[in-house]
Structure formats: structure tokens, C-alpha cells
Image: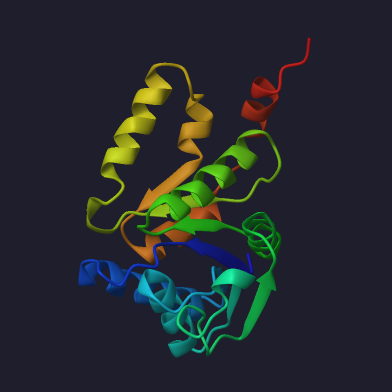
Length: 193
């Protein structure tokens, strides 16, 4: 692995623990020699994860849509900032640049990116690790829901287990190193008559 895409919230009005965890995630990526790929913003967790990566001597590549590429939103100190016309192009570019995906706490955008990435893995579009950094048990209700979806047979167990989770960046990245893609589950999902 050379690069990790981080999905996360852009709100500044959140508990300081979330902002600190994002900064530590960036530092950890830099310490491990992993390039940060993220949404290009300077606010909220987005800004803090980039600040952490840069403070740790790492590289931070932002991918932002034209409409958000403004002085009040775009991070000015990145290694590189790629600008796309649409949000679909933005997500495709982030996907293309990344060897794994981590969701920190966030809202609709973070959840959209997380679930799209999980869906792509489920149908065999990629075999890269996907994980949650579960700061302050933020994702506990989501994990409970996913367990219910598995119990009710809407998600195969192999796909549910494919979503890694830890509350510490090093633990999560260690799990990424051990990740084994459930290739047989993809075959099971994509049954052909």
C-alpha cells in the first residue's frame, strides 16, 4: 500500500476529540509512509487530517470539485490539489489514487463515499481494504445496523466482515495489512444462471 483515501466530515463545529483523531490519522499515515488522498478541504476533520499528514512530513493529495475550490474551503498547503467538474469525477479520482479507504466520522458525504466503496468491493470492482476509524464510538449505531442487515440476510457475512473497524489508526492500518479480500463472496453475489 502506498496511499490511503480518508473520507470524513468538514464541519468545524464538532467535538474536539474528532478533530484530534483526524490530525493523528494524518500523522500516522505520514509516519507509515502512506500518502493521504482526501477531499481537498481545509475545514473540519478534512482540514485536520491533511494538517496531520503534512505536519508529519507526508504527502497530501486533495481532490475537490470546481464549485468547492474556493479560498474559504480548499486547503492551501497540499502537496497537490486535483480539481474535477463533478462529484462523480471527484469520487472516481479519489478511488483511482488510493490503495485503501478509511472513513472517519462524518455526515451524508462521508457515508455516501463509504457505502459506494463498500458496494464496489462487494461486486468485485476492487479488492482494497475499507475501514472505519471509530472515534468516540461514533459508528456504533451503524455497526449495529449492519449486523442487523447481515442477520436479516441483506448482507452476506463475508461482505460484513470485509468492513474493518478500530478506534486507533495504527490498529486499523495493521488490519489493512492483514486484509484478505473475500473473492468467493463476490462469486456468490454475482451468480450466473
